[in-house]
Length: 217
Image 1 (cartoon, rainbow, N blue to C red):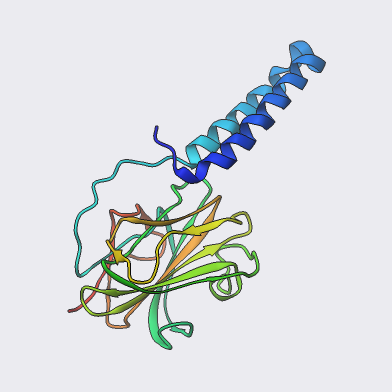
Image 2 (cartoon, one colour):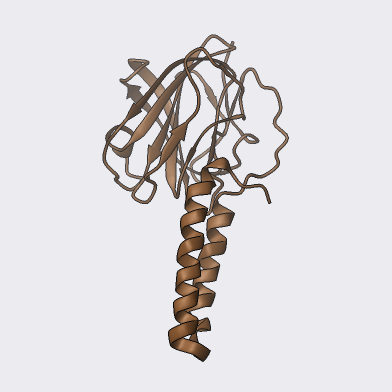
């Protein structure tokens, strides 16, 4: 199983903790040590599972908007996007549980024209105000269909580590990685109001694969 590059520090810490707990359990609890070691070993395995990098065949897209993350669609509504677009937009929010793959992918192809990191609070990721109040990043892409698309990584109550690798001027390719969020979070995509929405609340998404919307040229 291939692991994401963001796993290194977490796995080192988890390995040290597991080794210490296992040693102390065997030393002090002897025959009862498995009562501690087995649950800790399961948690240790989940750390590796969280940072897995699945093999996915990413296609080329122009009009299609691709699910940027694995998760569940929790919101589809018209909002006013005030950071970059300063206009009405359709917001699609996808919530990621700690068991989902947490690679963040470009939802559209085009050119990166804006990026910004915002420190903030750690409200639960499904809270509506988390989009504007939580620690987050905002990226905007000028799509191949000449639309300005905004998307936002949002930290949640558990997720406290957001990374994004893109820079202004970079070429965005729908379905390809631009960042990562550790341990549960949310991602919002803001689309033109005339966009054809192809997903619904409750849908499960697979990042880089599922088409969630289609834009008019």
